[in-house]
Image 1 (cartoon, rainbow, N blue to C red):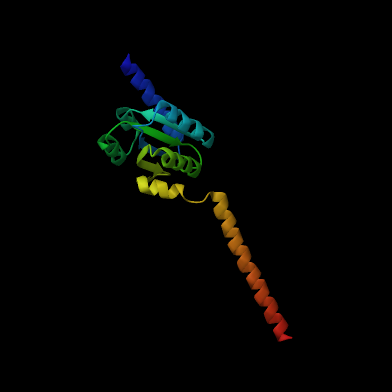
Image 2 (cartoon, rainbow, N blue to C red):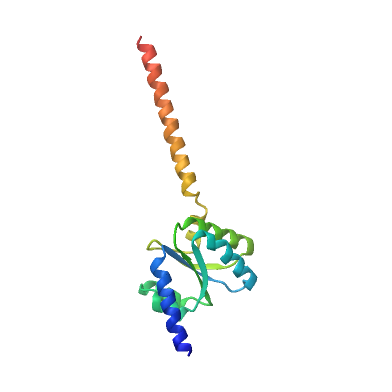
Length: 160
């Protein structure tokens, strides 16, 4: 019966992984059930799912041999953060959770096909949101345009 459960689990995980933009593998040892549920509840509205995953099942689903080796060689149990939409909000939430509880430990992240280590994931999580970056860009462009208008106005008044 457990073989049928494993086949169903692999099929379900394959279906989920086909829809994701990225995933983060973590070692969740030390987290209580309550803390796991808290993290899941915070990630759910951000189009992300945090699930405990058996390494053997995950290896069957992950197509890249490089990642499969890292999964096999990692010690301890794994939980997987599956990101279905924009990756920054779930990473920020994970980083906040890690800052609060000092757990889980990030092992590996793959976001839009690119691999990241633990430190890189936390650096990405510290980035401002897309909206803030766009606002900063618009502010910079607007300030430069205002300077240009001022300079052109000064040049035109001196030529008269």
